[in-house]
Length: 397
Image (cartoon, rainbow, N blue to C red; front, side, top):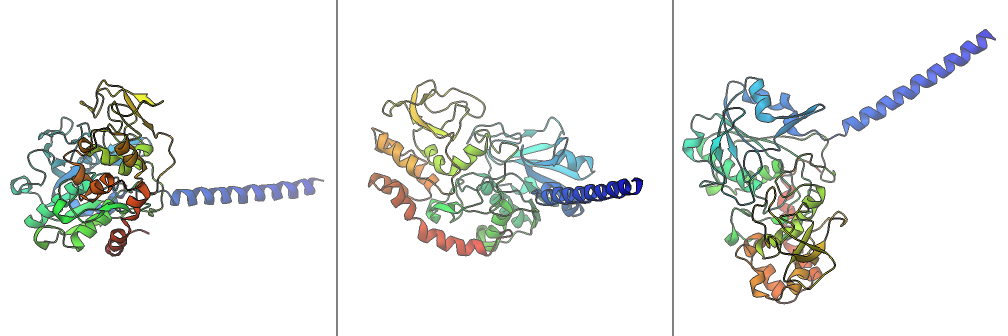
């Protein structure tokens, strides 16, 4: 009996050990598939910064993720005795609290004492004197993969300024939450602006690191100048990865839903229509006091990231998109709907509408009464041309 019990115990012990090993292997497999942002890959870029005077382009998203909290990359670099000499701040500022388009002043970071130079004030490109004495520039900002989201314009300007001064640029790559598709109207060069600098579709399906490669490789910097560029790559990322942004990339993109709908509703920035600014559902609804009476209404009020929202204090008749399924295209249904509901058709097109669209074509399509599907179909030829360019610069599949 004792021998039998021993054998049974041994058998169950072996089974338990095997089960534990399988569970452990499964756990490791899951961990191995976790996306690792490039900022966390310190061993890949710290050697490039040693004994260098470093400038960093960053904002509130520029963090190293840890189990017990996040560390801003500047704090991390300083703690590792990297000689960070200054920071450049994009739209919304170093701490990401300024309104969209708001003038951001130069300043001093109260925590580190570092000088902060705004790239969304009087200068949107680093000036030669601000790069004086800098040996290398580190760029680390979370993007959302939409042409008129200005961080890629800031990156292009930084690359160009550094190329002119012979200063290398390191881009720490981060996932694109809208990286799973390519869609929208393509920008025409004559309508180049800070809201779109290059001939790309509205949603271009690339990480910010891949985009940097494309800007460099396609000769899109001034005078075809080339930047000495290094991209630190992501681990375990594909363009089909669903990625939740743990930190809002700007004040009016508070969650996954707003980020996903932003490409479709961002056109409203160039119209009198409110797209949720002044509420807690930014880019998850749209409306106007001038729309016909509807069941869904809301009243915009000043809040974080929107000091002066459109139609402040006025009840807007609108459409609620907060539970809309995840989009894999730029959806024109809502823009067409808003245009049709607007009583003053000419006033619908604000001074930045064509800039947001990238050409006058979308305005003409709306005025001519094209359906959402007809408008979306008109983008296909240009998108296919872009895909051939994009393919050359992809890091991830």
